[in-house]
Length: 388
Ligand SMILES: Cc1cc2nc3c(=O)[nH]c(=O)nc-3n(C[C@H](O)[C@H](O)[C@H](O)COP(=O)(O)OP(=O)(O)OC[C@H]3O[C@@H](n4cnc5c(N)ncnc54)[C@H](O)[C@@H]3O)c2cc1C
Image 1 (cartoon, protein in one colour):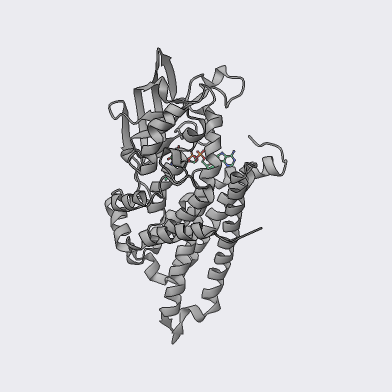
Image 2: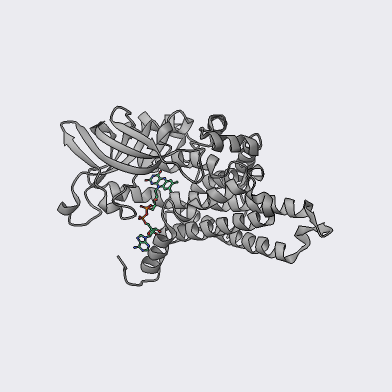
């Protein structure tokens, strides 16, 4: 076991940290207030090659590992950016993942260099209002007509659709009632986000407003057969390959925000004098921070274990899910503890803690709720009977 980062990983961390330093609280507060995309931040990350980190060098990326992506996102989330910054990038990281593994050479050559360079923005279209967590119940349908597919349907909570050129879109190509196994009959497309066939309606939400989240109404979207990923009917299984890395990346963001919160709280607790002493001298202030910090460290180790398994081609579903579970709870606990340290000032926007608090709530819900993660662990890891 070696827990040390390599010199290259230390360098990656430094590059990321240096970029983040130029984007302070005020920059991110304005991004959130105005609901604008952080273009300047995106451009600097693109120039530094951070966006294409998981894409192989052959297609213009850095050809690095999931651990490297975790290091980048944790560092971004720890900074003033939080998930407002990290989520803009993670979509290009795992959104392209099923394409990378299951796309054909022509598709990879056509799309990956633009994804890696940051020129092409990508979003991820799975969730539907009437299916919820039960993805097998999606009804968005792709009907084959000659060498095209005509797609109709309704997606919800699609992040970054306003800025995306392509969407990794999960559809049914065989209706639910006609398949033997409920996860069969779904197909995955790297579809154009053609605004003449897709109405994109932004959902007003609690936080992470540097990046939009939307409802999509898809009406007769024409997609070339070329943009079908892999074989028709196997889309769900291709998607699964991208879900474990997605869990690890979100876990990294949750832990990063937690560390960021603790760092701010420690600084404040050392400086704020009440009853003639720094508030951080009180154990009532120290213990929640120490507790939360130790939980973050434990969650971080679980993330790295999941990464190691994934990089070594071993099953990592249990670890990836548990990492997301522990990281999202630890991240929220840490930001909440930090919030308390700031007293009334935590509630004031100026200190950015309330923004972090709103963002840190999200990983407990998405990309999968923690109830569903626990259900996975109970059934798949512990061997308890399936509840649904
Ligand atoms: C800000 C944001 C961004 C998102 N971005 C994207 C995106 O880019 N692309 C995308 O495809 N999706 C996205 N999502 C969707 C997200 O993945 C879903 O919201 C999430 O998976 C939960 O689905 P749901 O909201 O339909 O909840 P539901 O499935 O309706 O569940 C509601 C509640 O019931 C619980 N529940 C349901 N079934 C069970 C059960 N069997 N046992 C125990 N508890 C259960 C759930 O845990 C949850 O607490 C995003 C969501 C948010 C909030």
